Length: 337
Image 1 (cartoon, rainbow, N blue to C red):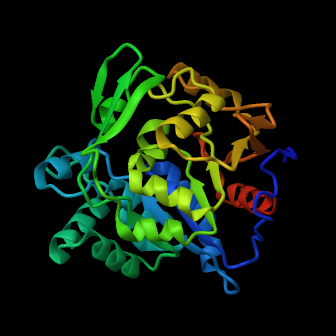
Image 2: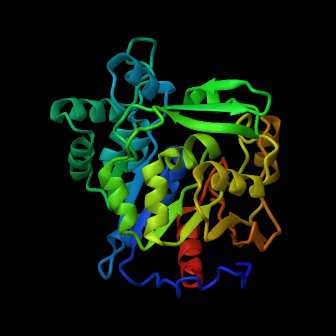
């Protein structure tokens, strides 16, 4: 770890990883799932477990989620299903079932069984929160999970040339940096349970993932922004491992942090960044697609301390956070907050 003594170090006297902390983690897709996978052992330990809450963005309009949203209405279930899977026990066969994806060319082709299960439970109960709770009970998960809002929302953006993008899939192919980013409807209310989890938190984590469509998307809900500010809790941003073609092409880590501050109006107390390098063959594949490692040598960025750790999973053929390494990094940073 790169040690820092920045202006924010020790801001609230430090947190202890061995205490029963209340942790709210915000994000979407694979990024939040990776973070929850790293933290679920803290929520499941026998002594002083953390009270872990995942708050999931629900603006997805692509793939199986997008089809269900268009054909049946309601929330896109994909990111919720992915995060539920991450919170299950490692040896759970139900987790594999949750992630099973139908093959072939029929009407079910491409749909995840977990997406259909979540949507069906929401339809039966008339309540997405109850549906998630029931499926969590079946799967035996560690921690709680909430959508950031139960209002169907659409992510919209405008780039520096005035071109508009409507829908998460469209925003994901934008020309960065963006001039504007917002949700429609703009007055969508966040889920009260999500707001309460933030207000009661000891620690708030912004998950890695797609910058505009996952990390910042939740922060566009004004009441949720205000809850983060009112909580007074330290906010730690777990940075992405790579840039993404389209959405973050050419953007460095400082630009990621500036975008979170500008669009999400969220103060960041610390940044956790990867310090490990990809194997040459994996790096070559990413660069062929337009991706670059999101590395930095800076110990401070925009006045925020940066903590660097080797976070890559050496067994993965893609750039992925190793749950044990990410868990260790978070525990190491806590006393400095």
